[in-house]
Image (tube, rainbow, N blue to C red; front, side, top):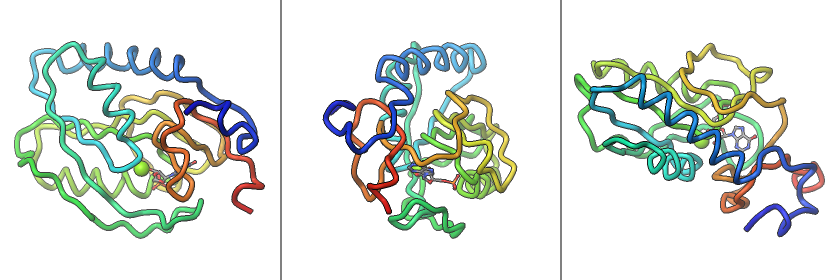
Amino acid sequence: MDASHVDQDLVNVLFTEKQIQDRLAELAREVERDYADQDLLIVGILRGAVMVMADLARSLERHVEMDWMAISSYGSGTKSSGVVRILKDLDTDITGRHVLIVDEIIDTGLTLSWLTSNLSSREPASVEILTLLRKPEALQMPVEVKYVGWDIPNEFVVGYGLDYRERYRNLRDIGTLAPHVYS
Ligand code: IMP
Ligand code: MG
């Protein structure tokens, strides 16, 4: 579905499907350049990063391996709990590998700062982060991010993998959720 199917639930559309695809293609060119001649494993964080992984991977004009992790950091609401737990670990041994973590959004940074140090302790050749969105004003933990789609204001957004109570993930666009939906 696109924003027209849920327009009363959104304050505005931040990024259209087309803008997202164009930005991911730009990031894919940077990744190709930075990892030229290197073997690359991209790690998607379930469930939000499914769309970014699918479209980024298909934009990459090179071989790439894909693996997934599931981490709990949010309950079902709109606030970060700060509690991080691995629900599904990697199937891949990342020792000596170049790892690129792919996520859809960095909010407080708690999840990815924890995950980066967890993966770094497994002695990979490198660990970097690609995120489609980042909320600089919400950051509580410093996270070094190599690739960012866009920095956005500190508002709750949905669509393109981002959910509110498991809904809106299948929205093609990204929009700001209207407060009447969650209050
Ligand atoms: P962080 O640990 O606070 O950086 O946030 C980690 C996770 O919270 C993200 O990967 C998302 O799954 C979720 N999240 C943060 N902000 C939003 C939002 O605006 N909409 C939907 N999910 C969000
Ligand atoms: Mg997520």
